[in-house]
Image (cartoon, rainbow, N blue to C red; front, side, top):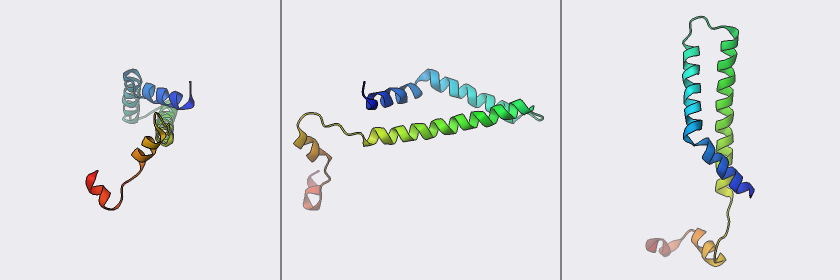
Length: 96
């Protein structure tokens, strides 16, 4: 399996319902612990670590989306692919 397919598979898994449910539960836990009047040190550590996990996953997802966007594979006729990716200029933009 190519690296591109692995990235796409990971992003699809990250956006799946079970993973979204897990992050929803994590958000609820964070909210409950943040609203606690006198949190224990381990609870403060949980909130801090949870925020770091969410931030790092968002950074990873963004980087993978950029990688996915830059990955170009030419399928079919190479000239058609190249012309399809070029931007029109001048009067030809009226006909696009």
